[in-house]
Image 1 (cartoon, rainbow over the protein chains, first blue to last red):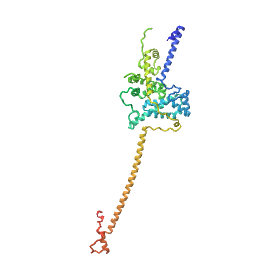
Image 2 (image 1 turned 180 degrees about the vertical axis):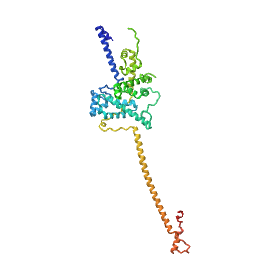
Image 3 (image 1 turned 90 degrees about the horizontal axis):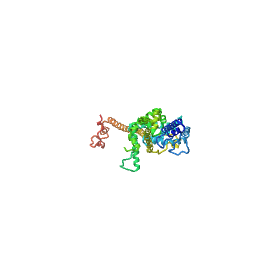
Image 4 (image 1 turned 45 degrees about the vertical axis):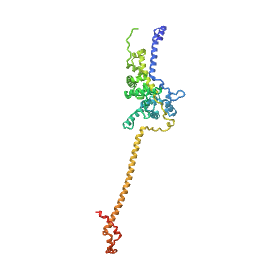
Length: 256
Length: 174
């Protein structure tokens, strides 16, 4: 606004209007870009840039180039793709299964399927949503089988492994590690409570957007739905999230 | 500047703006860009949502093994059996073992039965032979010897065989 006023003083009303319009357009562009960017730090890769979290890659190697090479049978390129997406897919599976062991196995299965079906991928630009769609379907199949096994009494009813028991209540321990453990436990419990009030699609959309950091467009491609459908479900999920004061208080660090 | 009635964005509109600004009308977008209160409210929501991702990433474990080691990529991938997949396999193996075991046990039992039957047949045959002999020679041996003339009927001493002779088994046979 100040620039616009100065421009007006210097050059008249036209400059004032032009400057105002430019500032608003800039703000709008920045706002739109921020909207599409992930919400938290250490964010996911951008569309064509590789992510370097699990290993150091010498020099920038666009994902699409790697996908092209891997699609033609280049095993080293596929190995690099695994290096880029491995942790993201593992976390994605862990958020939904809450079992480290199952997450390891399912991640393995997912990349096996990727290896098998990669030649069928027509648009290399869509690799990331395509990868997540495989992961979503694989996790869904796993959930279905697990419910079936539980029904026949071949599995326990809990969602966690036997060797992943929650830490016992040892009384008051004020060490930082214990506090962090408590926060961790609290976080997962409240997130699970929140996800129980979501429908299946709302949960998937919410997790993909705010935990896995996919854009609306990528989510729509991954779930084979329209963007407007994704936005509708996301809106409903956000309404339910806003009503979940326990989780919000935890996220803000407020005492309950 | 005249004081205008300020219509701040509702919670619903703020949520829609978090999803995508294009969900709002032009007027709402204009208001949002210039209203500190609405901007602050939207930032609050975005911060909360951002925190979920941060917390989740922070508390999620790191993967221990890398999927598809280079050697495995060159091989035909095998299905990785999960713990729960073993239960039906164990049940199937147990069923096969039970069926096989029952067949073997039946065979052994049949053989023993046959042996027993065979022994009983031999006993029956011996018994029938004795009956046949008795039918042919109904008199005790002593009297047969007398009739043959090999024994003096007036003698008071019987043969040792007669002394220890037990009544024929044929008594029980009708």
